[in-house]
Length: 165
Ligand SMILES: [Cu+2]
Image (cartoon, rainbow, N blue to C red; front, side, top):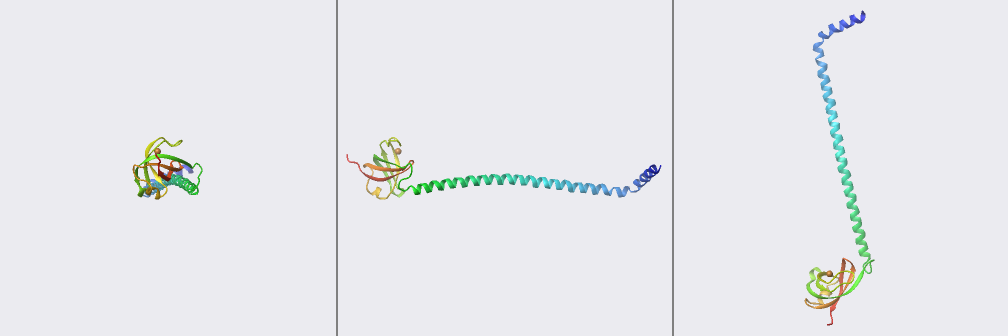
C-alpha cells in the first residue's frame, strides 16, 4: 500500500518535472560526448604513439645498421692502413705488358697485360700507380714489365721498367 502510494507519488511528480527532466538527458549526452571525445583522443594518441613507436623502432634499426656498416668500414680502413707493408693476403706479381694510356693526374696507367697467375687473364685495363715517378719512366706504346702489389682488387703498380726485348 505504501509502496503503491509512493509509486503514484512518483508518477505524479514525473509529469511535473518534465521540464527539469529535459535537462538531464542533455547533460548525459554532453557527458557521453565528452567520454566519446576522450576515447577518440585516447585512441588517436594511442595509435599515434604506436605509429611513432614503430617509426622510432625502424629508425633505431636503421641507425644500428648504419653504425655497424660504418664500424666495418672503419675496421677495414684500419686494416688497410696497418697493412701498408705486408697485409694479410697481400700478393705481388711481376707482369709483362704494353702501356696504352697514362693518366698521371689520376695516378692511373692503362696497360694491356699478360696473364696474372691466380688473379686474372690477359686484358687491357687501368691500374693505379703507387708513385708519380712511375709515370715519368714510361711512355704510351712502351713494352714494359711492372710490379703489381696488393690484396685484390686493391692492387697498385709499385714499379715499372721497359721490357728487354
Ligand atoms: Cu686485368
